Image (cartoon, rainbow, N blue to C red; front, side, top):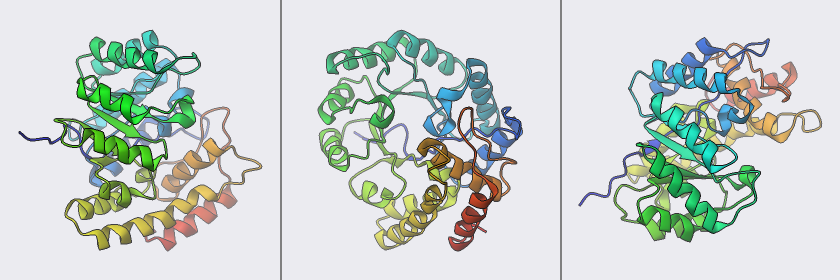
Length: 308
């Protein structure tokens, strides 16, 4: 029996561009989709953290997903974020995105509400029962303040509640433990959300990668992934080293002026603006956008890493 997961490869969390006056830049979003698909991405993850989803209104979320689905035109699958404060709200959001073209939904634990592991399992089971598309668990404790333990995730995976995990916890030990607990499980996919140790994640048995930096350099991450799958670790490491240098763009923003969240996503947007993919690097309110001096520094990194 094949154990090939339904979803594999590089599936970046799609950024959400805005115009200089703060409106959604839907033509820019279409350009981002084309940049990613033509760069060899195996799928797209709209309405995730890198998409600034918590900052989007319900109407904006609908516009973003409709634009991404239209621009993708079925060329790659869409794994769409459906994250809210409670189970009932997540179910409502998951049903919406499933009806609008999601091939799978990516779900965190609830947030704001205080809960425990038993309630978390009930949460994922309820969401999975409510939708007709696969559910992937999104482990991102920096956002939810709750680390999904390997044993909990493995239990949900083996019972068929979740079809995969996007691990953005930064906990490499837990990642490896989860891989050991799910290795050979039919249809289950384990994704790393790391930017700079993707080669190590692939060596540990990752089925795919979900790096925000792939918005900037999708082709680079595709080369890394292909090299790792073929066992060409020398090439994979070399590509990862270059991408690690590229990731230095997130260190450019002035931390006394720009928050950490705005700095990281702002660096991605600024890089895409410098590459000519989008027209502005505007962040969602109340986040601060990067300035011209920071854009100049980022442009220099893009040039040094071969993107300009």
